[in-house]
Image (cartoon, rainbow, N blue to C red; front, side, top):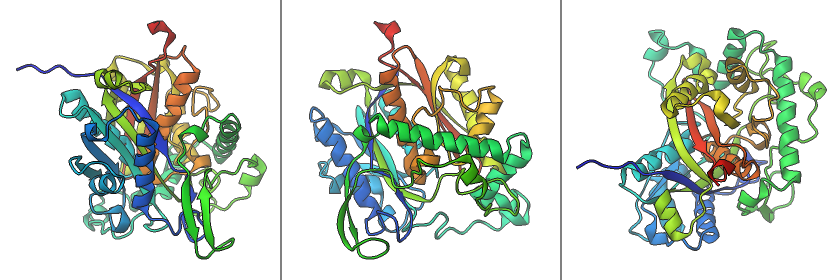
Length: 404
């Protein structure tokens, strides 16, 4: 019996404010799974027309799946968030593209008809679970020269990308980083970020400030007063006289995201918002030692599947793991470093990058921009992924004035 592929839509997305990892960070005393729970509850609160029992699956990503990020997070967080026991769940790991993959995986189920509605998101508490905790890379990778040893260290892969494209200088990376901070500050001033943030009650027992309870309502890593001159004096921790610094990279962060993905006909039947329509998606692999180049081939694949070109993309949300990685993408496609279509609200250099959660942050920001730009029909969300991968999703704007 032939099956019809259904239209899949992004209904809504939220996230916690992102925090700095470590004892001084806002979430030092907060469990990772509790951050996910807050996001799921907020989605249900914001969308009362969504009956909880209509959620068919919950997919939650984490890169380090141990401790409070283990135990099949999608299922346990769903139960703790108050979803009916009939709602199943599971966990996903595609490193930095975890939440993005949670969205595309559940979208595949919706398109196929195996689910009508799903919740997809991710979390990373890098303070509790530093990147690489508990891993045991097979010694063959290095012994048999399957990859360069630098592939195991993300900062070194960014230095390798600078080596490969020497015209992408530190000065260009620093200038890009300053623009990211400025755009993020403007997005906050224009109240384009706060509507999708979930306030989180946090407890402090030590570190800076007084012990007690507080409320996290804004992203902690942002540095709105950043200047090119200030960044120029920063150390290059991954290589002597290198080009990658704490100022032109995303930091180590804690945070969670979640979204509602649904069949378009079901969303409209229930009166749920339709913020974006999924057009295509693709993943691709590159040499692990230059993992930052990954979004280039994944975008080429996703655009080809959609029958579109980069020129059709009116808005681009590219995760800023490192400034050089975004610059390599823009350079490949002949897009200017300061093109206004790119990361209009700033990116991970300002907000932070809690690994597996970041994909849905890109989507919530793109969805807000679609509302502001009804003349734009298509946009994309793209990320580089650890160990040499890229991930891209192409979206259509349901507010596009050409549909009216």
